[in-house]
Length: 343
Image: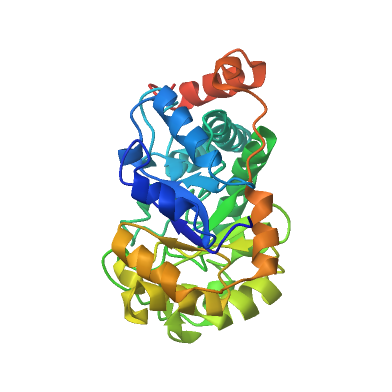
C-alpha cells in the first residue's frame, strides 16, 4: 500500500477502533502527534509500534518538537532550548552557537527516532523580527544569514541522527503580527523585499539539505491573492523552480483559521494539493476527515508518493542504547552548559 496525501491526528495515547479504520485508508500517509498523545516514553514507543504495524510501508509518524515553547514530549526527553536561545549563544560566540545548533538538532532527532517518530517539523526558518508573537523565540535570529547558518547546523545534526528535516514556514511568517492559527495574516511586502530577507534561509537550504518544506497560512497580496499554502505561484514558481526544491511539500494544518477561506476541510485539501502540496495535515476534525477522504476518492500522485518514502527515519539506536552513545551524551552536555536545566 502506497502512502496517501493526508496526514491525520489522534485523540489520545492509544488507538481507537475508528482511528485504526482511518489509518488503513489508502489516502492516509502519516500521523502527527501532539502532547495529548504522550504519557511516558514506553507508552510512546508502544503507540508508534502499533501505528507502524498497520501498513507496509509504514505510515510517516511526525511531531512538532522544536524546543522551547514547542516541544510535545517533555518528561523523559531532553528539555531543548528554543531556537532564539541558540541565536543568543551565536551572538556571544559564533563557533559555540554553531555547535549548540548542531547538538540541538542531533539530540532532538536521536531521541524521537529512538521512540519511533520519523520526523519533527523543524527547523523554523522564519526571521525573528519581533513583530509576530506566534513565532517569537522560535526563530533563530532576525538576520537571514544567521538563520540560514544556524538552521544548516541544526539540520546537519538531525541528519547525523538519521532524521529528515522540514523547513517552515515558507516564504516566511516573521513579518506579520497575526497568528495564522486564529486569523489569516497579510504581508504586504513585494516579492523583491521577501527575496532579500525572509526567503534567504530557504534559498540557501532548499536545494541541498531540506527534505521537506511547510508553507505558511499567510497571504502576500503583492505576489498572489491566495495564501502561500494554496498558491501555485508560491509553491510551483517560487519554491519548486526558483528555489530548486525537489522534496516534500506539507501543508500546514488545514484546521487553522488562516486556511478557512478555502472552504470546508475537503475543499481546503483539494486546493492545497492542486497548488502543489504533496501531503496535507488535517487535524482536530475527525468527522471532517472522513468527508475529506471521501472527497479525494481516486486521487493519486505517484511523484508525491515517491517523495514521501524518503521521510522514514533511520534510527541508529534504541532508547536503551542511546543513553550510552558517546555523541549523544556529549551533545546533551553541551546543551546543558548553555541551557541550564535543559538536560
